[in-house]
Length: 163
Image (cartoon, rainbow, N blue to C red; front, side, top):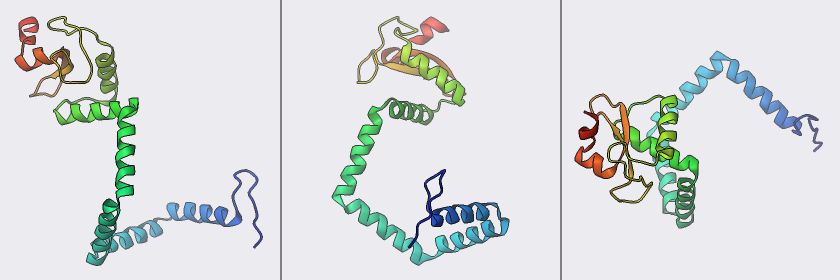
């Protein structure tokens, strides 16, 4: 077989043809509708669902796959991006409402603030202690109020200082 290489991208003739074919299909409304219909029928097919569940079960039962997934998860959580993602998720889960811009501002404040806004104790990050930094927010509106220590947050001590 003769392989023709595209000078710019280093692709074979077959790869170039496939790329062009895929581009045309993405622009063709009839092809898009056919693909959607085919995917819908496949998803609704009980045999397809059974095969998908079986495949997922086999992967999860494989100890090597599970260990690799666990290791990747642990490594990701240690990165700054992983920590930021988990923090954002936990804040949203606790009811805080914010846009992406507000989150960036609040998260930077959370990382840089050294003293509790209520009692002026030195804030720590991580761990389970009374001086750990917490995001205080209104539970009715979901809006951020200030960064305080766990002790002030649990006992509503901040009300003495701000209300």
